Amino acid sequence: MTAQDFSTRLVVDRTPEQVFEAICNVRGWWSENIDGPTHELGAMFDYRYRDVHHCKLKIVELLAPHKVVWQVLNNYFSFTRDKTEWTGTIVRFDIGRRDGQTEVRFTHVGLTPLYECYGICCDGWSAYINGSLHDLITTGKGRPNVGEAITASEQALSPIGHAVDPIEGRLSEVQPRIS
Image (cartoon, rainbow, N blue to C red; front, side):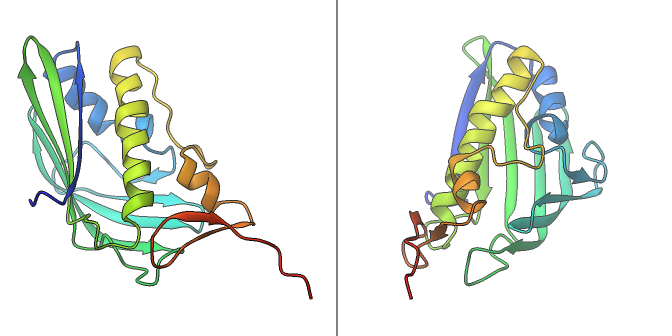
């Protein structure tokens, strides 16, 4: 891990076991469009969001109730020059007790500002980890993607009229071209 890898954390008033189970319930907080098991060491699962993003992940570490680690085996982004950004990166959840509560440290190892998708991916992970996963842990109901745009970045990527600036990696509105 480097200081530039994307990382965020959340602290909840739940047990590490409850947090671990929620993290493994990927369909409950990230996307209902997940194919494959998400609770088994060595298992592989696929994530898909329309034709914008799809990836295959492998569960490479599952240490209840302390750690969940996925390796991104394949990745496709429709909005980056390098369509395979994320391939070979590691997604990790470290779970521990802190001041009587449970802390989740989420790190996407390899997702750094050098990636064209960095801004969009940080927005997405922040929304899913600090919003949807937090809600799943604390209320029992997350806000996973159900095939429709959830985050601001997904919303901007979905409709016609928006594009990703290839240099800055930020979304911008595209003005219609008049012929």
